[in-house]
Length: 160
Image 1 (cartoon, rainbow, N blue to C red):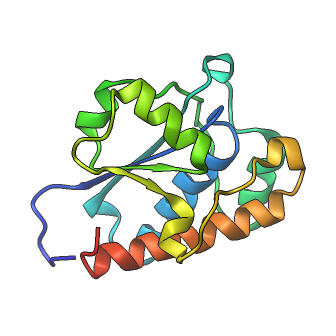
Image 2: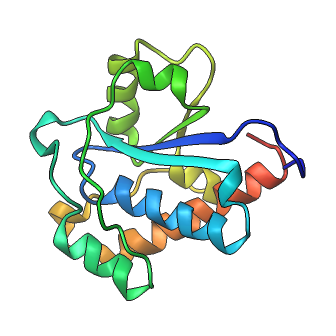
Image 3: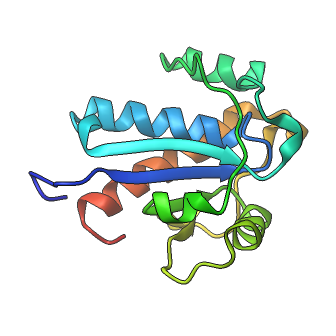
């Protein structure tokens, strides 16, 4: 990343309900850039593709997992991905293939190549399993950390 970037890098993490994986990624990434002294260079948010969870806070087990690591997601309320997000954000990062499919549908495609899978930044295929269904919040947290660290590294190296 250039030392004096004029505009913030805008990242939107996307999952199904915006109550587990994408808010975990949002707050992990915010923590990483804060720790690196880069917070002023980023705008980071998250959204979901499922209307049913809109307005709900981060799911309690996901919140507890973040708090275990000193990351507080207080104040986050689930919101729905909308077509306008495509123009607002530089990168839209899906947690799994079905999220990417819904992102294409909602945003009307990806003509500027803004869509990515979070785990692709960790050099891995596949997606991050939804802990709402698996109950494995530790594995989700580990996958999110790995993906976010890879994303930050790629941004440093200007590979994205």
